[in-house]
Amino acid sequence: MTKSNSFKNILVVDDEIEMRIALETTLKREGHHITLAENGKQALEKLNEDSFDLLLTDVKMPKMNGVELLKALKKKAPKTVAIMMTAYGDIDNAVETIKAGAFDYLLKPFSAEILVATVNRAFLNKNSPKNEFVRLTPEMSSPPDRERRIVTQNKKMLELIKFVENISYSKSTVLIMGDTGTGKEMFARHIHQMSPRAQKPFMAVNCAALPEGLLETELFGHEKGAFTGAIDRKDGKFELANKGTLLLDEVTEMSLPLQAKLLRVLQEHEIDKVGGRTSIPVDVRVVATTNRDIKKRIRENQFREDLYYRLNVIPLKLIPLRDRIDDIQTLAEHFIEKHSKGLNKNISNIASETVELLKKYKWPGNVRELENIIERATLICQENTLLPSHLFFDEEEIQTETTQPLAKFRGTIYDMEKELIAQTLEEVNGNKTKAADRLGISIRTLRNKLASYKNPVEN
Image (cartoon, rainbow, N blue to C red; front, side):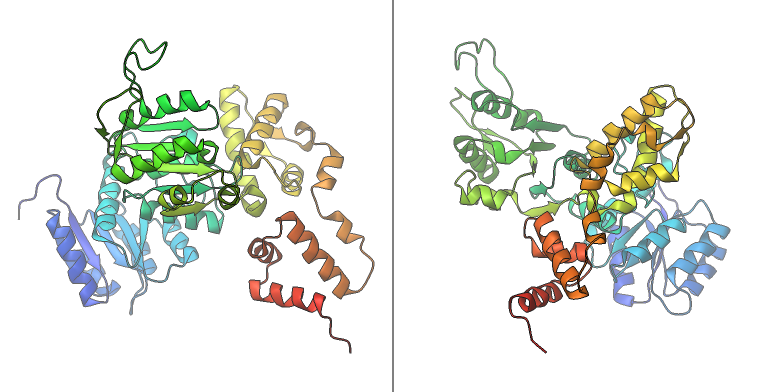
């Protein structure tokens, strides 16, 4: 069979016949030549008989699992790209496949659209001499722009990144919530770069930075003569982002009249320029961000509830740095490399004492604050190792940011536990879910303990 250069030879391995047929049907529709195998051992036989551009295999199979098959593939045909499939949603299992050499993994069930996009991305990554697409890994999770990459090895962050990949192909609006400095804009850009709109414009507007009148023309544009000073026609960000993605940063700072106008755009997919007479159709995916408690803003009549539901089709809650301490060293090393290069420094190490000091701080400014401190430390450092003295941390600041007072607590274990729970609840503003997560207990256990403090049982 003669194949076009764009069509590939793909080996599909799955122990479920219905799944094999569905995968074969979808990929054949794209023009690829498909060979099927029902387990790892049969797949190895196929690899001995023919060469393949891509291996698409399930992870959990009898006789030989997908990870074992992947390791055998890397020895036998190292240039063959591998994509793993699993129905179990275990991020640790998925990470193991990436470390073993897989390009990507798919969590079952997945749509035909996601399958085709992942396969196309795998071939694009393989064939691009400029490495236009960088595979996300536990060590370096990154969109194509290396200066705007999401660096993490935290399990929950990796799950968020995978979730973003899975929803990137839809047109639904996304609401990204998170503290200042957690990387909301980076996630918005990543959604755009992983979507079919990646080659179209990405526009960003900071809704908190502009007064109401200027924000309206920035978003929707204006006609010539619409107001004093409007000497030319201006296209707004919605028009400029047509077929692409528009980021509405800090959307909760938008005035109520503008919120009403935005709601109409999201419902009708058309805009009205300031001073315009006719509506203009637009095809834009909107990603909105906020660092505010948006439901509180709704209760205070500062944000429209109907707009909230329109924006919150896909909610994304980012994790503060204090809850991903395992990322501190990875991020610090990334920022040292980045700023050393920019400052023509040769800093290649970070002392373990420096890392421990960084881990003691709670990072109210999150990743952005960490980068600023590392940039300053890199500038100051004259050696090849970053030391604690380069951080310029105030010792009192570090102590107030830790829970040292509990270490000096005198009383019963019951009283210590009660005090720790009260302190944790205060730190998370009474959010029981966050408190339970930080304490390492279930929400039910936390509620039971709180109830016992109110109604103690006397022995």
